[in-house]
Amino acid sequence: MTPGNDSFQNEFIRLAGGIAPKLGKEGQIVEVTKEEWIKFNPEVIYGCGDDRETAKKFFDRPGWKDVEAVQNNKIFYFPCDMACRASTHASYFVSWLSARIYEDEFFKEENQILKDHIFDSHLLDLELEYIKEARIAYSYIYDFLNKTLIIDFKEPLCIVSTLEGERSGIESVGNHYLPPPCWGIAHKPGLKRLEEKRYKVIGKSRDKTSFLGTGADMDNLSIKRRRFKEMEIYALVTAGVRSNALRMSKDEGKFYEPGTINIILLPNMELTSRAMVRAIISATEAKTAALQDMDIRSSYSARLHQATGTGTDNIIVVSGKGKHINKAGGHTKMGELIAKAVYDGVKEAVYNQNGLIRKRNVFQRLKERNIGVFSLFAKAKFDSPGEARALRGKLEEILLQSRYSSFITSSFALSDDYERGLITDLSAYDLWCENIAEEIAGGEIENMKNIIGDEGLPIVIHKALNALMNGIYYKEKTNEGR
Image 1 (cartoon, rainbow, N blue to C red):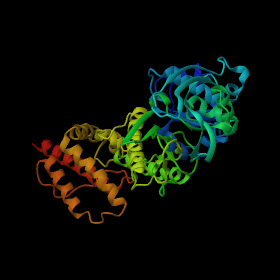
Image 2 (image 1 turned 120 degrees about the horizontal axis):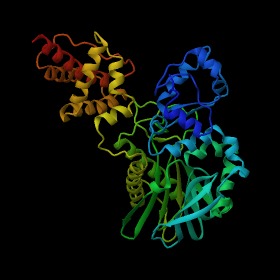
Image 3 (image 1 turned 90 degrees about the vertical axis):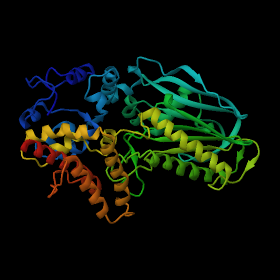
Image 4 (image 1 turned 180 degrees about the horizontal axis):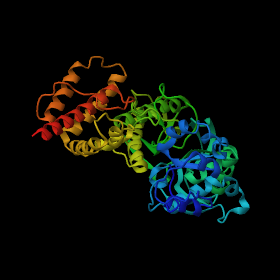
């Protein structure tokens, strides 16, 4: 399937400088035969993130795998909100698509329209004696808007960075936002060349600075300050968890995708090397606690696992100035302040970047586990397609009732504990599911049907959704018999 000749997607392709397929078929979605596919021979293929798994299987098939785009691995994925909808971000998506198609041309400086330079800055108020100035600088790099957090010190300090290790003589630290259209362009010359270009634009040198990089917008930066008597700490956090969140020890490390939780810690006292290294553990544990308390799911195994971080997280700990602190672990006040600042900072940054809060509705939380009401019924075992369509709306109505939405969200927590082996006996849960089904049906159900056809669902969630669908099914059957 692909968009038809008159679709907005094909208009996007043409505006980005691409050649859209002309199959002589009108409509938003049209079928493509293998012969049409081979004849057109696409040089570039793009889709939304939800297409990734299907594409892996599809492009292994004879004929479909033999076009230039597949052979040259020119298959790109974009957020569904942009690739699948004509939205207010249309022009941004067109520029992003163009940059992916023509990376080589965008990379050439002679093709740039805008000069690489800082054109604006926004000052930040960080009340620490050793900070000269803190700001977010707005610049153009590769013709796209970049944003850089820059923190300048009054004198050189020591830092520990999970990206660069321990360093001394550092005059500035920061965090650089590289926008999505630049990701492909910037990766062509390699990380070192990209750093050199960034430092040149912001007027810094690598030997005296330490910067992190992120795909999270710097305007979504969270700044948290925590204090106890004369001791205080700042945590500056950016976070994106949509495409790169994972659970360490469970998910496989394969490749890089933009995401990243970056944390910069600024104490008002001088941390020793030992304390700076220990602060990384305190901050990491707090970050993971925040993700788990928000039930952020792994991007790679969402149905089974909560995320512990993303695959590209980094932390910078600045030594600071003042009274010497030799410990920053969980039993110390410094460790406590670090953890509280990071915990609150991660939650706020995730909200700022991804719009996620702790209290999300059941439809959102199902979606985060790659479970959709439509897909459940597409694979459900009903007597006819018409019956499935009629009952789908009933399930949506049921899930709008707090009693049944709470039943499903309870199954999420129970499912995670069951998958971890903390719960082994589900007999009491089976009775709960049966009671819920009969409550919805309005009477006793002698034989619970296995309606759901999605074999990949965790067993606990499968039982919960199957209970709702049985209740709806038997209620409708009872109404039909009257």
